[in-house]
Every structure is written in C-alpha cells, then in structure tokens.
Image (tube, rainbow, N blue to C red; front, side):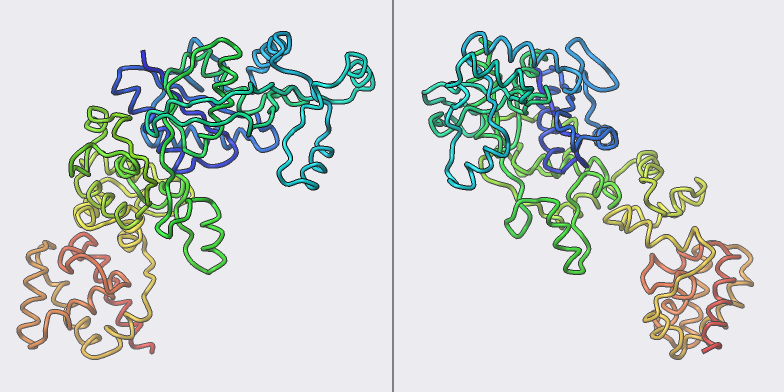
Length: 489
C-alpha cells in the first residue's frame, strides 16, 4: 500500500509551497488508494507553538486535504507529534552508539562557532571519537552537556529520485551530524527517518531544497537496517521576478509601501480565493496532466496524477493567472458551495455579506458571481448593499454628482422611481431609458449619477439591477442623501 505524509513544522502559517507538497502527497495516496498521514514536526521547541499547529490544521481542512492518520484522528502508528515520540529517538540513539555508528560529542556550541569563524569551510573533525572512556566519564561527572552525532560512512551515496533520476553525492563532503541534541530532542534528520519507518511511509515527496539532506537519511536507514522510501524532490516555486517565494517578499512590499503579496495559505483565504482554485493552480506548479487541460476538479486531478509527470523545472507563481482561475471557480460554483465559502470567510475580515440574510445574499450573488475575480472583490464591491452608510468615492462625486446634469438627474428620477407601481428591474430600466430619451441625454450621463448616489462608486452592475436589489426604500433614501450632499457643497 502506498503511504505518504506531510510533516510541517508548527512555527508559523502554512506556506503555499508546503500546501503544494501536501497536495501532491495527498493526490498520490488518493490515486493509489493508499493512506495520507499528517505529522507535526515540533522538535524546535523554541519556535513551535500550539497556535501554529491549529492554524496548519485549519488551513489543511479549508483546502479539503483530509488525513487518514494524524492529529485529531489518531491512527495505529502514533503519536503524530514528534515531541511525544522522544523515547523512540533516545532508544535508537543508544542502539546506534552500541553499534559503533554514533558517538557522544561534548564540543560546545561556542567552540563550534569559534572554529567556523576561523575557517568558513570548517567541517566537524570527529574530536568526539578521540575521547577516551575516562575523558567521557569526567565530562559526564561534571555535568557537561553532550550531543550524539552519527558517524557518516566513507562512501558515495546515490539517491534514486522519482523526478530527478539518480543523483550521487559524496559523503566525504558531509560532516558527522547531530542526531540527538543535549536537551534530548532529536534533530530533523534523525526524527524524520525514524518516523517515516515506524509510520510505514513508502513515498516521500518534498522540496528540492531537501535533496542534499537525503544522503544523510539514506545513511541512517542503512545503519538501522530499515527500508528506504521512494523519494521525489519537487521543483522550487519562484515569484514572477525569479526569486524564491518567501515571507521576505511581504517585508519588502511593506517597506516599499505596497500591498504585501500572498505567501501563506491563510493569506489566500483572507484574499478571497476559493480553495478549489488554489488546489487547481498549485497542482500545475510543476505537474502537468499531459495535455492542454488546466481547469479541473479535484476528482479529475486524483484520476490523472502521477509523480512521473512532475517536471524538474522550477515553477513561477503567476498571481494574475491564479485570479483568472479563481474567477472561473467563483463563476461556476454551485450556489450552495459559494454561500458556504462566503460564510467561512475568516474572522479577521469585516465584510458584512458574511452575516447577510439568505434572501439578500442570493440577490447579491446573482449580480456579482459572474463578474468577481475574488470574494474580497465581491465583498468590497457589494458592501453598499449590506450597510446603511455610504462611503463615497470623492473623484466619482466630483465627476458625476457635482457636475451637470447630476443634481437634476437625481431629483427628476427620484420622483419617477418613487411613483413606480412595482419595483421590478424591467420597470426601473424602462423609466431610466424613457428619461434619457425625453431629456436627450446619453445613458452614461444618467446612469452614472444614480450609480454613484446609491453605491458610492462609479462601478457596479447595471443600474436597474442594482436598484432592484437595493430596494425602493434604500434607493430613494440614498438619492435624497446624494442630493443633499451636492447642495451642501
């Protein structure tokens, strides 16, 4: 059975690159009718937090990437937090020392830092191996902390990668690395190898930045006598400028006074993206179904996915293309699904459409579902439907209300609209068209003052549809307010 895993560190939000790794691992497990494990790698005690763990779980659920083993669901190979598996790592460190494949090292971090400061190419010199039993006993008696290092074999190691092919790396270039820290916590390399073994992981998909770590993992597996999982190292995701997508992109944008780009899954959640669009888009960052097909539901991705069709070339994250994808997903979403996503908007957003009654929400969606690139765009553009207070665009006021025939249009049409026996879009449209004909005015000269008066903006769906959804009472009230605004100035 194919068993894959996604193993994030709870030190912050889930990065979009991590989400792609999770998706590919999930797709492979689903496609092969296997198991997908979520494991929390929380050995960095200084940076790992429960809050970050919960954020990761929420983002995974929002994306729809369910797990068969892991936090909240349990499983036969738990616990699924590395901080709860310390005895496993301790026992294996002792075994490796008994086998002569690991040893204690009493060199302090300060000593190592001093060596590296003197020589940038410094590689640990195995000084721990040269200690006599008496020296070790003396260090332990004085309570000097120690780490346990793995003794790397003196041979080349070939990684059989499902994407990159065979990659041979010289272990002579690698130092004996720490597997167990002085506080009893394992390093990443040690924990990940043991966890993959005990959780019966058969396929490890991860970013190419981990390729240089893989010889360490293979050497550990060989020393412990456990099988190697199949490895697939995914291409890096770059921004459109050719740099690696990172949190530093946000910092640079903020310093430059620009809107920070979305980097983490939560950014895309509050940015108004459909999870289906995100999954579809990131699936194509490195993987191709083998034809020109781009938009596809998750069921089709499961059916067509294969690691062999993941390319070696690094991918570019094109936000304009993502927005285009998202617009299609919003436009084609079943109404029940769209309502669900709108209601799930994160609490940090203050869009009143989240709390609208269903009747009003339905009318708004009729207008904005076909034309919105993001749910934020939909929420911002439709805000005037759900609030009593209008925020006027000052440029639109100057251009369309304060200039002729703005005031006259609003005054005349307010009375005509008030007299309509039925508040229906066709009746509203005919009233406006008849007025244009009578006054010999173009539609723009009439529609734009009305639009600005009732929405505060010069952009909205057609005026007659907007007024119908807004309702007679709110429309007439806002026309009155706009007339007063013009006369005050």
